[in-house]
Image 1 (cartoon, rainbow, N blue to C red):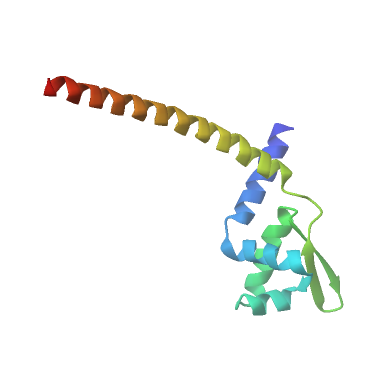
Image 2: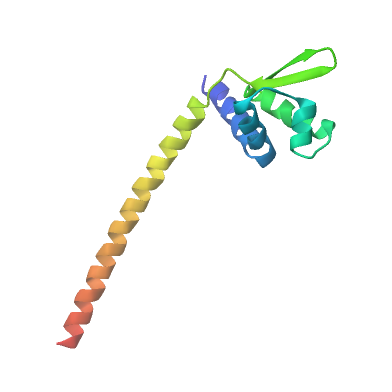
Length: 121
C-alpha cells in the first residue's frame, strides 16, 4: 500500500514540477480543451502538448477522450488530497524546526545583551 501511495505521489509531483503542466491544469479548471487548443495557448507543437498531457494522464490529473480527430482533455476525477496531506506534514515539520531555531536565536541574543551589559560594568 505504501509503495502505491509513493508511486502516486511521485507521478503527481513529477507532473506538477513543470510550469506548462501546471498551466494546463489551470486552463482545464476553467473549461475542457482539445490538445490543439492547449498547444495554441501555450505556443507549442501538438507533439509537445501531447507529451505534457500524457504525463498528466499518468498521474491521473487529466483524462482525455477522442472523438474523431479531436482529443478533448478535462481534469481527472482524482483530487490532490494525498499530495496536500504530504505537504502539510512536511510544512508542520519545518515550522517546528524554524520555531526551535527562533528560540535558539532569541536565547543567543539575550545572552549577547547580558554579556554586553556585564562588560560595560
